[in-house]
Length: 322
Image (cartoon, rainbow, N blue to C red; front, side, top):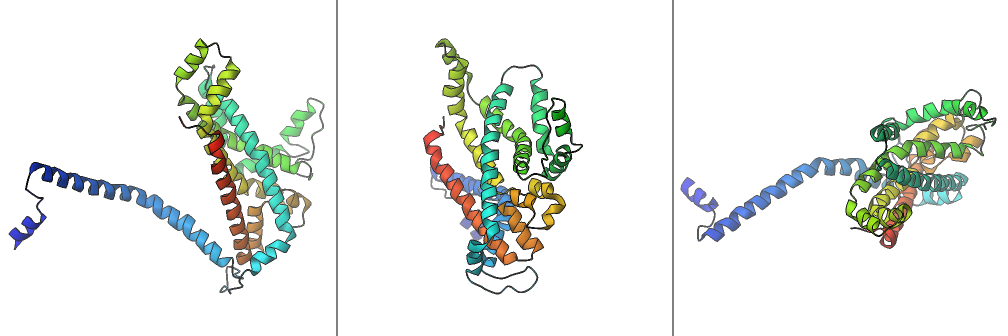
């Protein structure tokens, strides 16, 4: 019986090519197994922490769940209530304003700084490290430090402006300036990481393009607009996508900047900067309306998907893959 089992598992012995094909198939199956084994942890993480919560939130958006009691199905009641909620319009406006303020400014500055750091300048490594340092700091810590620096009475920002005879505004106490302050801090915080991404893209551009341009007598501006930007466009597209997603999900800095005034949803400072994610937090974890918060989360998810799909559609017109 063992001899029969061994014969059953032996490769075909008709000719050498049959044996080679059999060995190749075995190797292919082994490689597939190893590949699946390597991606299994990441797949499990995406499934557990992303896909399942999204499906769960979608299901709970049709209930009146308060996160403690048994949820009761209410149909589309939460979505209909969202249409009448005055805070939703404020949150949507602030979210879009914040996105339009942070994404273009961060992207433009990151391209310019990355291009400068790609040149042969003194202390280039020091500058790269200095720009990347804010990235390794948690956003809550960043917001706490900047909240102190932007204090209207003893903050270092207003003290620096006073040296030039400028009276600094109440950055965090005036509805006209608080959104600008949030955008400014976010740009400072996001600039380093995206600069490094674009710097890596710049270093992937072959010097032969610039050598050919030098032979033709092209100016620095021509080389930047006709060579650097087109060949850097895939990296710029990636940065634009990630920046937009992060901006639409803004919460940490806004939560810290509102401070104790966040206890009241009618606070003028909170109304000036509250975003959709802040509204989801407030409805779900303060007002204990988790079903309603899930409905708002679904709306935000659809907005992010729509904007991302539009960005992918528009990339055909300006992204060049070498």
